[in-house]
Length: 79
Image (cartoon, helix red, strand yellow):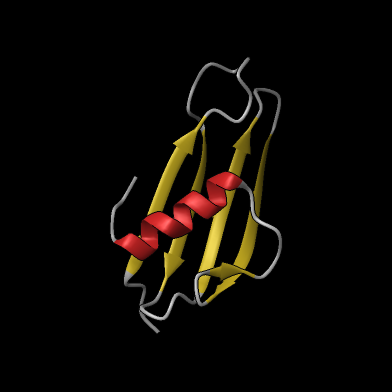
């Protein structure tokens, strides 16, 4: 399958860090199936998570940033 919908969101996951070094990337096909990749930067470490998405709905719980990246991908607007 091809990736037709991409949503990208950068943000500061911890206000103390002071920079938008965390991000969420949604890579979806036309039907809304695909993955979201989230990288959380804390200053001391970085953690990366991947979650499956089916019909624009994450298969595991999703943060507000992950929901926003999915919405950006669905609308065709890249953050």
